[in-house]
Length: 119
Picture 1: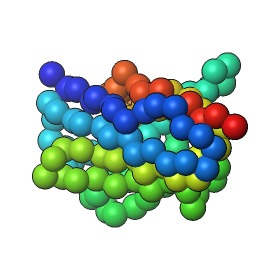
Picture 2: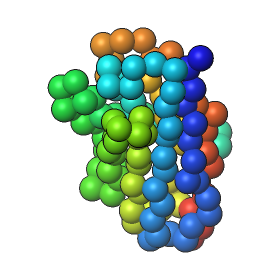
Picture 3: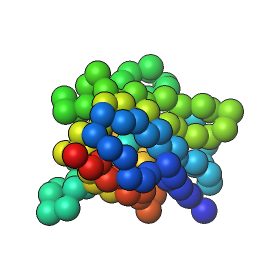
Picture 4: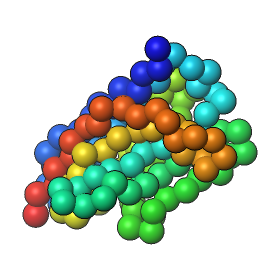
């Protein structure tokens, strides 16, 4: 059974940092690009970051470039999202999902972890 389990969300003041984790199981982790998406209240889900280890490519939404960093630790089947200089507009539920590369179906999703940034 495929599982993606996010953790690390919480409440933080503007300018602060959080690190989200996504623990994956049930599939060959190295073969998939795993990324982060978010959905703010009343808004559509949007892509935040994607890292494909097969070709070493990264994607970041313009709104998070320079503040967020995606990384993965294949030995632990875990993907991270380091979020620095957080802004109130980063408030959302964050989901990890696979495959985010655009070359395979985006078919597996975690349950999400909530991030709230206070001003």
